[in-house]
Each structure stands twice: as structure tokens, then as C-alpha cells.
Length: 418
Image 1 (cartoon, rainbow, N blue to C red):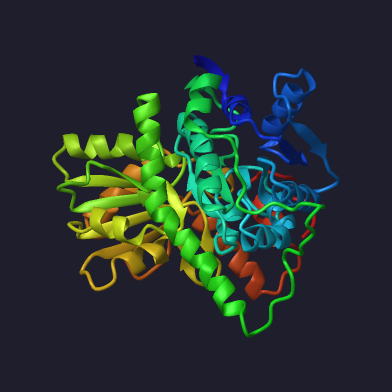
Image 2: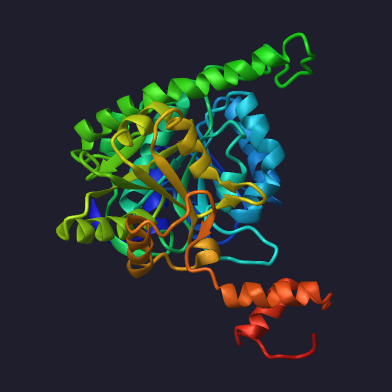
């Protein structure tokens, strides 16, 4: 049913209609509204049968999910930022055991310095943990991806995280069509686990594996992830047939057929980029956009096909590998290996800095005019005055933390002492 609703509330309702049997969660902004809403639905009996577990930490939440899923229950949780990092050990356990847990990551920056606003550094830090990573560009897509995520996780017996931009999506109120219960029931079959602990037939899971088989275990994890590259498009096609709207899939090209310059992006910034692409098209510039919905597993062949005719690719991403460069950019280069396409790595929106249409337009104007060096990592809207000031203080061995010094220079906090 279509209604004016906050993104977190819409996701909570969609998850509830997937009939999870166990929800284990620990609150951390900006995902708290999701698990609070699910707790209310369990309390009122609207989500029943379901056991809601309030645990002592995010590590406890994922540990409880592992136990629940291993016992054969459809299992869900949500987290963000430092909470995802606190789960790190258990994330690898969940994927290594092949447990079909679904988790929402309300993307938020990682400190220090502390920052509660949106970027993708949290989920990107866990990109090699063995979880499928799906990125939503809107609240409607976030709702639709959660319904698909349970089907994907359970069909392949692997864990799936649905990533939605914290605050930008989670706290935005807009028109969203949340599927009705009978619609979800028709699309998502009851959970039939591939493996299930049974006290009557005790076995061990996660046992010690030595060098004689560990490589093969990790290979099978990789092989199962690669199966998702075939399964995700099939599930997306089934979803469109059932619900009458496209959602999910691996990538979504926008005006790329004859594009000479293509922007590659994930998450909520996609809508802003579409506006700029339309403006440039109206002015006669052959520009397009590739929205990457599935980041893990990396859809190399689909990305390569979508970007085949482009002379320039601009990867606009909300995280980067410190000391190395772009993350999505490096994956894009792998997809384009052997082609003459030039890839520009551009970092934007860190710590919640707005990715505005004006900023994207200015960047693309510079790329089209040849003013952007593809051999350097670029930061959209970088305050070079603040950076240069701190570099001068570093050279002079002036004591004090970088963040507070730059905030004083920016006039955000009082001058105080250095």
C-alpha cells in the first residue's frame, strides 16, 4: 500500500511482512527506528510468531542471529557504522557457515573523529566479509530490496546486507509502496533451511579446519557468492512480474547507450546525478549514469558491458581506501581491464557532506573540459584552505588534534588554545 512514510518505518513493515521468526538487534543511529518499529510490531502481536531479542551489543546481535539461523529460523538484524565494525568477527562467521541472515546497514561514517552522518565507509570496510551487499538508491528500492534479500539469502544459503543511506533515506518521509502481506507471501516462500541444528541429532558447525581443506572452504564461499550474479537478476525479474515495478538487479544503466562519459555511483546520490545527466543531455552532451545496486559480488561483466562505449568514466563514491584510493573505482578498473576507457576516482559526501547537483555539474563540466587528472584521487568540494592550514601546523610541529584545529579555523568552535 502506498503511503507517506519514513524510510525506516517502511523498511520495518516490509521486513515484518517477510515473516522473520527471530529479530536480534542493538540500537545505533541511524538504524534505531527500524528495530524499534519491529519491536512494537512484535509487542502488539502484528508480527507473530517472532522472538525479539534485545542484546548487549552488536556483536551479541550477530551472534544471536548466527544461533537463530543455524537452528532454522528466518533471521534479521540491523546496524550501522561502529556497530557493524563491532560485529566484524561474527560477520565472517555467518558467511563462513553459509547462514541466510538478512541485515539492514543504515550507512554511516566511521570515526574517529566521531560522525553520525552518512557515507559508505562502514559497509565498504566489510566488503570482503563474504556477505552479499545490495545498495538502495531510494526508500522504495530499500523496501523492495529487503523482500528480495530474504529470497536470495535463503535460495543460496548466504547472508545479505541491504545498505541504505543513513538519515538521507532512513529518516526521509516520502511516498512508498509497502507490499501487502499476501503479496509478500506469494513471492517469498516459507523458509526451508539447508542446514539445521537438531538436539536429537547433534553435530558441530564451525569446527576447526586445517590447511588440508581451508582453501577449499573459502573457494566454496566465493563460488556461492558468484552464483548470486545469476540469481539476483532472476529474483529481480520475478519481483517486477509480481509487483509491477522494476527493482534490484545488478546494475541499472541510465541514458548510457550512446554516452561518452558515464558516472558510476551507489546509493541515494544516484537521484541527484540523474538530474545532472538530464541537464547535460538537454545541452547536447552524451553523458550517462550507471547505478550499481549489487556491489558484492562485483558484477564485473555487467559493468564492462554497460561502460563499453564510454571514453571517460567518473566513479563517484562515498568511501575510499586510505593510502590507496577509490574502492568502487578500483573494481571498475578491473571490469574495464584492457579497454581504453579512462577512469576518474572521485570521493564525495564523506561524513554527510551534501552531494549537490551544482557540485556534480561542476565536476562533470571539468571532466568534459579535460581539467580532471585521471591519475589523481579527487575529493569533491575539498576545503583546501583547511587542509593547507593543518599541513602548515604539522610542519611546524604544533600540537593538537587535527579535527579540532580545522574546526576552529572553519569557525565552527571557539579558538581556545592550541
